[in-house]
Image: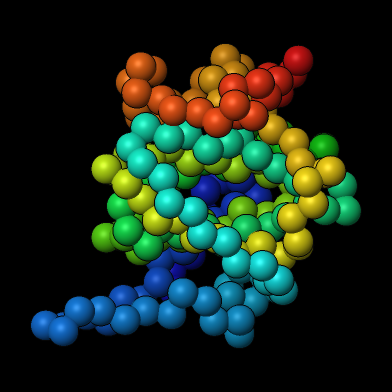
Length: 177
């Protein structure tokens, strides 16, 4: 796997080695030994999958305190703009974000350490999105930041009229509210 630094400590993009031929392709999504050697130790305990249609923006979500989660995110089919925002207290990059296009074609993944908000915008007709978490989901510890926070000024690469949000995601506060 090739590791691409994002300029935000611990947040990396991963390009797996893809082996393809006339039959299709194969790649390792996760190899604990290689991941530990190149990114760091993590013990994943939960895998999730979602399917969404064009224009859906999910996020920006995070888990607080002892329920914080590191995530390894990827797209099985379709394409998203995946966004991670540094929320780590005292971090020199607090409030900074990185966006990466992840798709079923480029096979890129992003490792998001604990202490980040995460979200994505669906750029394709639909998307199947998977992620591994190193901590179990706890509804009482969930938090969120408004997708359209003017201080973050994230370009979600979608026309505003095409954006589809859940009721919960419509009501998240701004980061500095």
